[in-house]
Image (cartoon, rainbow, N blue to C red; front, side, top):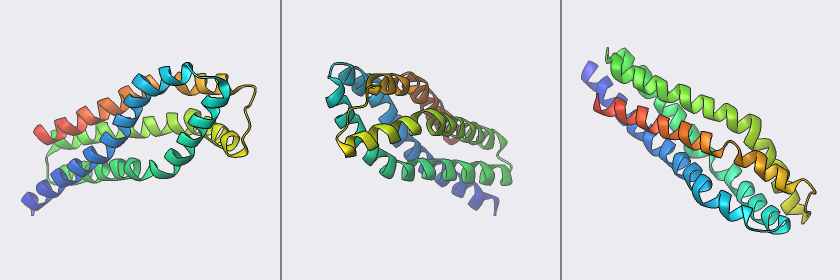
Length: 160
């Protein structure tokens, strides 16, 4: 039974790694490419582009995020149940990082996303459009680093 639990834990961690990697890659792209590109456009273009990016992203990106958190949690539990504590700890660290990322997203990024999305749908350009984007930009590096640390923790759980 323990061998089956170990293999199930590894499979769960691989699934977690794939889900987390989607979010990590997106955040890195946003930090390295999207942020400076949006700084170079006028407010109307900023709202149209970012509002629509968030409108689609907020509908489609939760799936890999939920998969990452759920699979990492499952992997940590299965590894602990099999007595593989180093793997369980590494996966649990990933879960903690992913939950911290989720709090940042829900408290800072998501409200900005909703405002920019609503403005884009309405064809409006809020007077605070640039400030909204700067608020979003101020945590994108942290979000990318947190996701990257979670990817490293999940990789560690696989190689320990």
